[in-house]
Image (tube, helix red, strand yellow):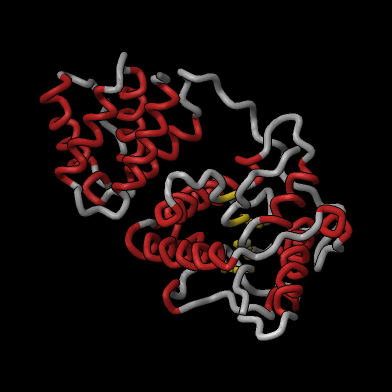
Length: 307
């Protein structure tokens, strides 16, 4: 398959089959933070196998191509990471690329392979533990725990990691030849371990993908005033001033937010989605999650109401 004109800024490497939904949410959050400084014109920001592959793709070729060309790799360390032969292959390809640059005269340190403590950091292969996987700006908590709780510590961690990715992107790590990359042996793990299956077919325009709806619900929940039912009721009342009764059923905050998103997508036009953004820009203008909410609403409008 043809390679994109500009390499991906980062490639997410993780052990498949564990916490995959949380990994996907983390990837989407991180990609958003990286896209801001790189600009909207940058087409290829982050690559995650379950979102970047489609039925009919040769997944081995795709993974090797991304690992041999992406400007950086974020490795999410877990109990199973060091056991995965494909994680070991991705790691080895990046190590090979970095090693070729590091041997050049007067070479500056290349920080393009970035291991992070996702759900575990102990019992990793020696080649993994050789690299630093913590930083004071990320705190002592595992990334998966920061992700589950959300709030400012999580957003601060995202911004820190995004800054590292942008710095690595500017260094423009040279790609590895396709044949050479395919011949690289895994640095660790079971060479027969596989990856997750390809992503499901992309929905037709007019139908909003379920994952995109779920991402908006999650992003709304990260907005502080919307983390309890009282704040959600107040938000709904603000929207009802312009839109009329919305008939959102009571429930837990997540259930109510899902109801708001579902009702907005059912609306005959984009008025409710626009009102969601407009009211939050007044009541939660200083919230770190607001740009993410705004961007997701923009994407949903493109799917639901194609021009």
